[in-house]
Image (cartoon, rainbow, N blue to C red; front, side, top):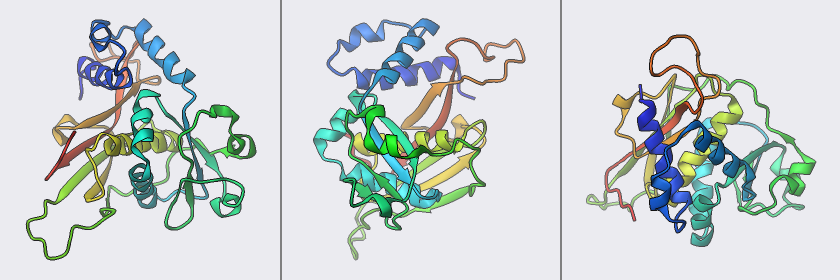
Length: 260
């Protein structure tokens, strides 16, 4: 199990990225108290930069493949703004085929069941948000223990020396709604592309687990969120309380990794 101190360090690292150019040294000196966590939550809640995703149905492999395809298709200017703006992702129920003539989707999944808008500052005011219902927040369906997502662009044929890049995404399925699963996977994969942990030649394996185990790492990226419904029983240092955190997804990358 990850300690709360470790999770706080991981969250602080993500905050520093969002505050690039905003005196990160001063930020580092501020402990992640319950009050500071509330401030961070308020900052994220006030963010207006939003990506809207319309789903006709959910299929985990197509979803992960499409998140990667979407993130890889974003121009550099939008990628840089993504991290700084605490970009929100809103998932709506609808059929992209019925909406394509009215709305300018930036990316559509290969089976046509999912579509993404480019990041914008419309927030809750977007026409799609007013037209469609939020995707259900029910429990996720039965998910395979492991699934493979091929690289968007296979390595050149006959190049035996081409580095094979592989990534492993561990996604938690316990105490996670389907809507939360969509958000966690989306943010980890999109930010991995934006920070160049993953590129178009990366093969991805997704592991669905009850909880993250540090022994599955080391992790290059963790999705750390407030643990709002933790078990409050017990009296140890890891029991629930104000400011408690939880790791809901982790990414490990190996082989030919280029980070810049």
